[in-house]
Length: 330
Image (cartoon, rainbow, N blue to C red; front, side):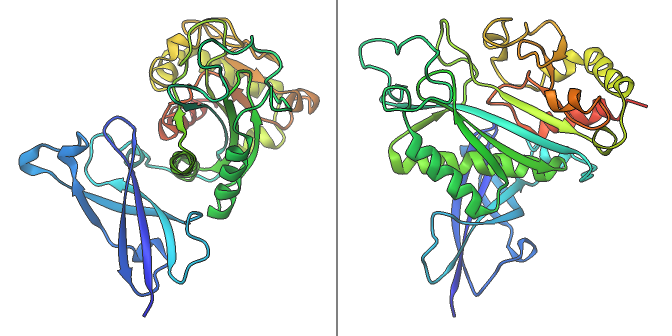
């Protein structure tokens, strides 16, 4: 009888990824068949030492891209921590697939305490040649990025693209998902795969929104979103209503859009100030960008890009607050 190897993945108290591996006898492929499992919550700040057992509940399984040519079946398993106050996924009460999300996950690759490719004794050249750059002097980490893309595709995550960002060693990838749970699960698992691959390369993944002070863009997680109504037979008036509600609830959005986001949302480097709300057609300095595709369709079909979320934000919280706002539009 063969074994199934399950790599359980969950979020700790501070939104950090955790994992451990379980060997199960027999062939298991359905998440409903995967057993509950406990861990020491006192070591992850999720339980006190005198009552430390926390329970992992499998919620979504992915083919494990790190173990392909093997006799046994390997899966990455996204889990909820049962009865954990930090479990934002459990707060999702409706998971309509009519809500579509496209996350633009930015991050820095670090090695030896500095962004990859930066000289040991000084800063890199000013930003300019690095965005979508080509050539060894303008790009650092492409092989790693390509392997991450392939690994996500093997896992069944709908990664839709990658590109080098404005600073050397800074990258972005895009993930498409539907529904609050599915979109959040896939984004978190893509991050897990990124960090696991970083272990193999000796890279540290930095998700801080402004890891480098100075004249550099920070790292965000621009979130594109749409509903059935936005995608079919819509109107400029409907989009204006959405933007008006976004303005009304700006502070509620900012509250869950990531730690230290004030360091990034300064009104410079393609951002709007954290205390202001603006929108504009093709405006990357606004809180919300109205994409050219939406404008060209005369607002009858399209989507919007929320440029406020930071790179370290929790996608479950992002999707929840966006949907809560959209649901207020008549």
